[in-house]
Image 1 (cartoon, protein in one colour):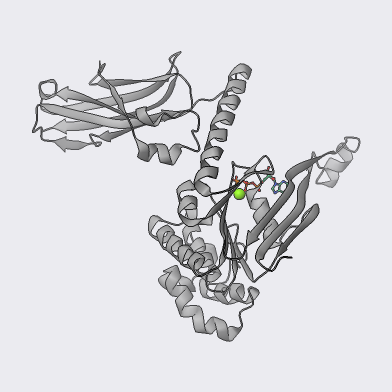
Image 2 (cartoon, protein in one colour; image 1 turned 135 degrees about the vertical axis):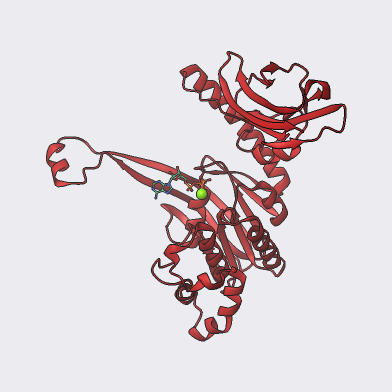
Length: 377
Ligand SMILES: Nc1ncnc2c1ncn2[C@@H]1O[C@H](COP(=O)(O)OP(=O)(O)OP(=O)(O)O)[C@@H](O)[C@H]1O
Ligand SMILES: [Mg+2]
């Protein structure tokens, strides 16, 4: 292996054998003795070649089921290639599935000892750092409770705090950051940046594409089990989103033909807030929100006190677009996600009012609806 590389993957294939209709009990075996067990080979990764240099920060991106976690597990060596090789050079730590490596009946503190020793720390090493680990986790007194009583966010805090404190040279992280709350996510993010800048090798799997852009200098896009593109994150993410858009539309077209398409949508009212009391100061009162769906021809309908509104203005909502651009790729036009309309104060006498908003398909099927009640005081 080249001394400059932290990870080398060569002509690597991974497939899983999946067995259907497996008889689990003796009774099933007797009843279905002549039934053929259907075995299928599921080719998950095909001919992967990849060099990750020491000190690189690399993101693996791709749709659900494209093989990202599988590749990370292969790097961790908890599973092995069907053919080809995968080699790593340097002490490695990984944050894979939540709680992997924790014993549910031990306390957080006991698990730190248990977990850190797996990563090669001596008892003395751990004793020197345990305060730092606990402090980073912000678990406070919960640290002495069994981890089976932890929430997923608490699990993740503990796992992350241990993983960054075992002096690993290579960190492999699978999506786990998404579990933390905003504050802890930001803290992890800052820590990962610090580790990156101190020369550690980081490989992260994430659907949070903005995080990828900020943290990684390289993105590898896995598409249908193969590396489709590898390079600057901004470019790779852009190409990835274009492909997702094409695939989404193709899937929807097929589903519509088969009659199995389930369109969905979200419609939200930002102002006024539900059950708010409003003291009208101006002549005009603006109501606004946003709407998205994965159907190609939708329209929105808005009623104020059962009266239909017809002067609805659509306007850009980049904030909403950024959140949904992956899941709704191919269906979002950033320019027209927002909706708003104005009412004259003369239309709004004192007392209770109700706004109902709906997303409808061209044939009148309702995809989403929302309503608010407010009082003019
Ligand atoms: N142990 C296994 N046995 C059989 N199939 C498996 C196994 N592990 C993964 N797979 C299959 O391999 C494919 C890739 O899974 P993987 O978890 O790597 O996807 P992913 O890219 O991480 O997706 P996600 O974004 O949803 O996390 C999936 O189709 C999955 O069903
Ligand atoms: Mg995964």
